[in-house]
Length: 329
Length: 256
Image (cartoon, rainbow over all chains, first blue to last red):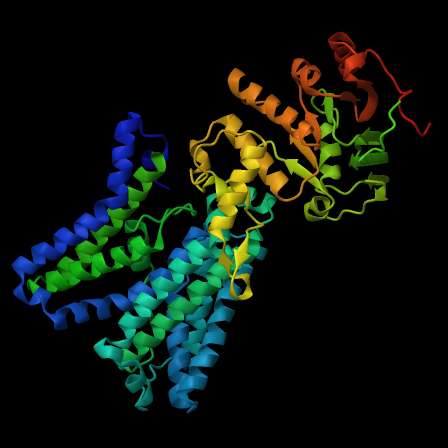
């Protein structure tokens, strides 16, 4: 990896080190607030209710994916199967619901089972195959992409039955369902990580695998559960994206707006370490919102889509650098 | 010599790795409430012997008796259930988690539906109680372990063994990487454990420390237990000569 950045510890006085750590832990909150203030002034439409809801809705898909991604990253496992899981989950939803005319609740239940299966397959490769997680899950992703092309017979499946959209486009208390799901997934993640045995084991497994194992933590099971949770979260996001497009997202990378770099960017900006065991999921929600606000604000100011893509790329690089600096402290 | 029944007794315990006999038919008694030091040169077989006692290695031959009952151990968890609690050399601590979470790692206290939720308060209380019991000075149990001194880390690792009901605490080179002050802290800890009625197996290279804190000293040489001495009845020189193999002493092995 980036040896030059990660090779040695940064030599700083304890005071400076503490300040830098505090800055790294809190810059995101400050930046998000400043960004909001800036756009509020620069783009008058920014602070309207419609636009706030719009921003949150557009944050929801990446946000839900990132919630699951955060959990698995904390176990010290990198899940690169997001594109594959998205494609397969989307195709399965469309094919089961539209082509096979299976009722929506049953479709969703079967999809839940399928996504657990996807997580299991990834974990089988990573744990039993003892393959580095980034590579193992990338391989799994390829399998899922292939399966989705096969199941959809190479076509995009258009959904004409109305129930999917009418279900997903509900807005309890005036707030769209996808926003509820976004916050719910982080609330769940927060509770799991901070108040359950599984959460304690997730942190321990990621922070020190062998110490956790010697202490009786079922490390393999923890990683397996992490990968399953990530696959289920990604599938949920895929259903939302499929509903929005009313179309199977054969190529999850491009169409769904769900991709692994977005999840990476958000997780690293939020301060989750690539090595595992370090980070807080609530900060990742802020990172997701930060990116969504940035995208929305740029659009409102009339920036070309290219500007957003480049900005996103720069944010990714910045996130990786921040992670590297953090590890050298 | 000793009226007490051994809490741990090994009979003819052996283990080979390929052609290497790491442990050769070892008989050994460890008495309850005492500090037994296990000494020997590198490669004398101490670690292999200890790993078998902890259930991390299966012996090729021989028996282990714990509290007068023959023990069958398939893994470390079995050994733990029988009260054998190893404190690993690298302490098996997770640096960026706090003292409480380390203390209960892998065996967390829970409450509520399906025992899903962590009982943070009870764990903090128990941690404080155990640390007080071993006179450890860790000001804040919510401090991450990374910020503790070597002696404090040792206390956390030992506390963890105690909290799980460990009766035979096995400490593998606990002072190896420590400075003078922290070494004294760990030796105090061992004495505190003895005063609490715990049995301690203390593995060390440092004869001075061994003589200072132990009740009996057992010496391994080339995979054999070459002798066990009451600490009060031996000398630094005798122990050293046994370690280097100059003085073979097999009369202490009872089943001959």
